[in-house]
Image 1 (cartoon, helix red, strand yellow):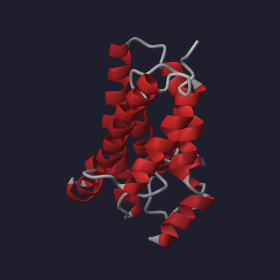
Image 2 (tube, rainbow, N blue to C red):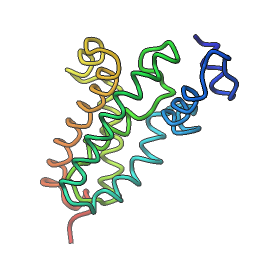
Image 3 (cartoon, rainbow, N blue to C red):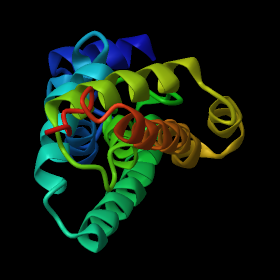
Length: 176
């Protein structure tokens, strides 16, 4: 399987991988982002934070609908992508990281301070697999477990972010 990952990384693929599968892997890795070291953190920093900035101005119902639709798409994408790659939770596929971050920053105001704090918190909680994340990742099937553990990390982060906003509005960039 490492050979297929290496082939994906340099753009050469086995003849058994169809064009549709190649496209799915390209989309799932967000082009080059899935191929860089610390791909999840880089993806959240380069894509998630700007999405937070844009989506924070949306009505809550629209934000929720987009986040839920993206999360559902992430489950399917990871299910199919991992099957193609012959892996579980391939680091090349990064949509799960964005889904988790969307939950982390849902319904909080955008400030650069909150963007950085939420990025660091969500990635740390995701990497540490704070319970029940590890259980979800191990026990839920396929894409559900891959995305589910990131959503849990996002929900933990979201809870902490509300305390940060309440207790330290100046640190959150919200004090006048």
